Image (cartoon, rainbow, N blue to C red; front, side, top):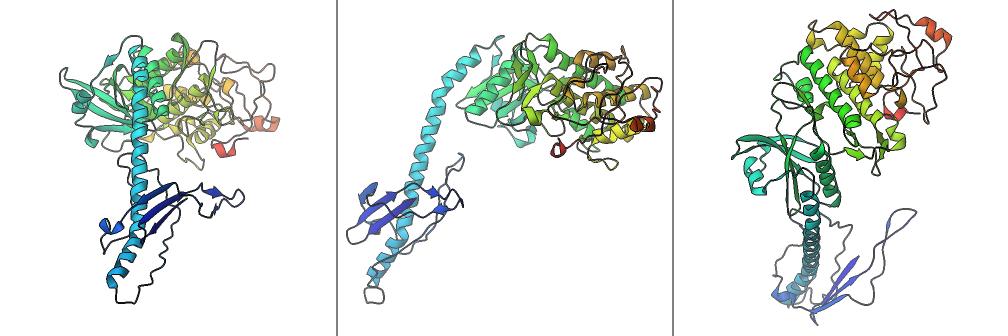
Length: 506
């Protein structure tokens, strides 16, 4: 709280300040009495500063910095105007001007304080630059360091017309490097703070060491006075999300293209989980993060949430909430706050259904709240192929479509250890092993999860399971279901029904 008092006779300006208290019960702000000792005293003749006809208002602009000022309440009191109504109109105007001018002076002081804070903040940021530059220059493989003016020119000063996309970590622009005549994608981080720098270094450190034909290739980086940028190889065909849901201007992806795309993503995910020297968890696997090159080969990108684990670790704990995008987040993540290989597989399952059905994961279909529940109901009724994207008409391979749909359900299993591993996923897509058997009823998510009963095999460990029924489905439930899919000869197992939205998790 701030009090500003001005005595026109003595031309004395006094500023008082006290901490604003809040009632812990009602959360209301408590009005405190003015302190007896001012924090600032100055001899000031407002007549030389404030004109007789002046406007009263508040202004505390911080320019391009984040607005930190908040005015909760204010009060203006003008006292001892004994000359009001007398012949000395000049004296009246002066005193009124003084009463109006005092708040103006207050705002000037607040603005000065805000400016001092902003400059101090920028100096602290500048002081931390050597640490960031040292970390960048020590990266293995020595990725290229771009000059800021080079990227600024390449993106036409980060013109909105060159904008490719935007996420929680920043904006991606298309650019052309004039010297090489090379198209690039420039990711400009939006958070100019310590957390933003940590995100920047984490993404750059991980992607710099990865080498796989189905991962977006890093070209280099740029750091200039708090400005953080990463330069990637440009993908001319954009994202998978754009081609599935971009509107009529985008031609419908053919079935062979879709199948090739998911096969490439599965290969990239297996590399991250098993073939790299550290286990890398992507944590944000979705259609908009799957890029397509000029030949529609898939490239997994956007490693802003990715984390590398030591080989002995199996999960990464996130302290700031559940990372990722709704519809692609595994149900156990809302309870553990940890990202695992199994949670990545869950996101891949959502992508599989998205590609096969041509519907986003959260789309309401057939009276169900989300796509996975709708597909599971069709699977139970032996009509799973009715879930195939209607835009394909009959131009798809039925065996491949059923394989992707059932694999999508297997990857979307509510129990983490029931989901297939990436090695099995690759074998299933390539048709070198049979499609996993999926229960007719979607199993319920239960936390903490219990181990499966003895004799019940997991699709996460083997594709060829023995015929048995886990706990949670009665004999009558089993007898009411008759498989009518192309895999009629195979036994199936089931569980109790479940829900897809996080609000109903138990």
